[in-house]
Length: 244
Image 1 (cartoon, rainbow, N blue to C red):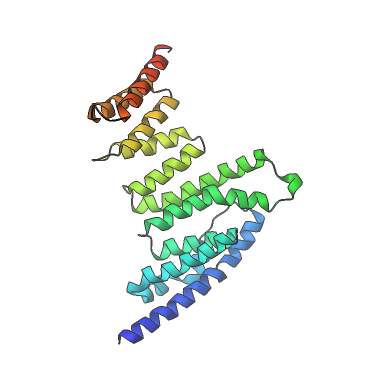
Image 2: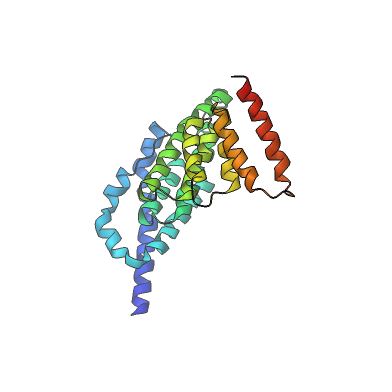
């Protein structure tokens, strides 16, 4: 009986793996037309998910790993449409795998802009165009993460990744929202609180930044090498506050 179950799992693994390739075809046409577009519609139609996912049962995690392998192979080839469609499929099969969401968002935000630029003629490439691709892909990466956050709104890894992408693209308003959530957790990390203070300073909220830094300082041991760094940050932020 167990052999039959395993054989069935391997069958579905192969079927899903093939589907990850097939489902990239409509996405490939989309990507050729507009390379900063992600769409799962073609995947959902091709899969008839209600039926197929019911057949997967307890093997969803195993199958999603196969699909993620397909995404990784396409990543190595810088295959934009194939990689994006496989990531969409993997997260649809097993949305509980946080790594799929965070790594997928990272690929979209940081890797795909360079792939898009590399496909253009050398004469058409420029730093300005790369930055434009980065902004567009960052928006898509955040939309990708928002799908996960709609299901897991308190997941720290998802919120952190969203905040990091926002910072990397100078969206400090969004970054503040993300790091505020991280800083208000029951046991927030010093890293998240320090970044939050830096973002508050960037956004001109100097007194609030001072309060955050002071709260970290109050919890920092006297012999910690972090104390003089925090003291200096507080002093510098107070000077900025005085200039208002």
